[in-house]
Image 1 (cartoon, rainbow, N blue to C red):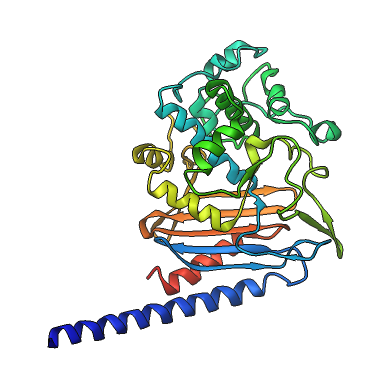
Image 2 (tube, rainbow, N blue to C red):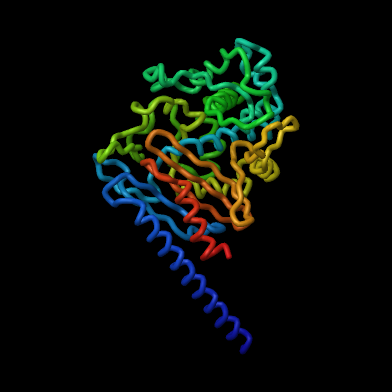
Length: 364
């Protein structure tokens, strides 16, 4: 009986300590972000999760200037390039099912390349890792009106008309939006359905992302945050209809909330829609055999791999129109930090400060 009482006292003490630590963390994060966002301006939503417990989630500012709707953890934002991780995982699902190989040359899927030799050199894995050497030959600034409504196919087509590569595939890194327009089209060609529907059925639903959306032309008009740029003292809407290439969904067409992105991370940890080994491979640095750059590789299959105080970071950022986003996982600690904004903010500075707060509270 005495041992039981001692155990209960210790358990109560530990629970109290955990609660105190959680409250301290919440107060520090809230104080920090309250100083970064104004209550009556476009802002953002933040979430921190450890294990399966959400330690902190809060919205700051307004989702829509006209309606004055407050941002909450359930507010839907455009994710920008975090969308690329969904496209990458869609390709890997098809690979797992034996319907394609990431070592396939893209000529198999795009035989209409002006220079067939280019397409035969580039493999799907090069698209996934931004090492394809394909030149982004879109003339967006010269043809702004066209690119306001151009979808994935129209954004990828100029790449197919190039005479040469920028470098040998696999030799170095160069970030490429059209590469993910191409990957989205490969999902369609392989699955036989719209790639948006494929991602919804195979990733969103299993991951309990029931309110998330993917554009296919016009973006969601209701129930989502609008993106804004600030010019002098005035906020101007900057999303679909104002910002070119917004329709090119393969590189930035996913819309979600911080809460549903937490579900996405949990689905990845639990290998809900992909085998664990494939997920781990996708979140490991890919180093091509012919790598020649002085810059060391730092990307897997869409995911960037970094380091914070000796801890591995798996992350992706997003920037499109007035939207900014950051998704950071620390697998070793089962920790996730997500930030979604509907106005340009310095997400790198935010991340640095949040990681410092986490280090002082729960990463010791």
